[in-house]
Length: 238
Image (cartoon, rainbow, N blue to C red; front, side, top):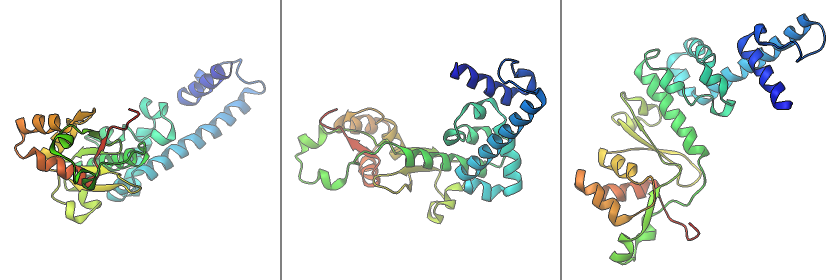
């Protein structure tokens, strides 16, 4: 019954008075609609605030008025209405395509990836220090994969400069959280290819071999990824 009532209230808020069933509330219909309007306005305001807090850099670039206008339109889409506040911005970067400058869309992509990295599962990142002293055989058989907090963002502009001026020329950005802090790194195409190949646990020798087929010097790319905290090793219980 609770799920039925919640679904009916959601349909009425999203679809308007015509979607309000007669059996849902007792009392004067005008007062019921007034209460639902207040509730709907509260939800709408919460959605807009959530988008502002999710994409502050994008908002600064576009300006408060333009960002508010776009976020209001986005918040009325079916996709945004179906999402909880914490995930309401998932489709926003792609939705901005053709509606905002490419730099704004890139910033939104970076900010969403930053949040995904921040909220990713905790896991110890592989470090170069752990590899020191290992035999070649042990090193090559080490099972590795992408760290859960590692995310790649491809850009069409200099949007990464908003995070760090040194990243202005970067068109592939890695967001990684080896410890508590999310950090941004510039990636070369070989680095990005190596990380894409490591979605599942694979022996390090296989990763180097696969990468070498398309990107000479793959070993250096893997060392670079380890230095950023973008890889993890298999745990004993796994």
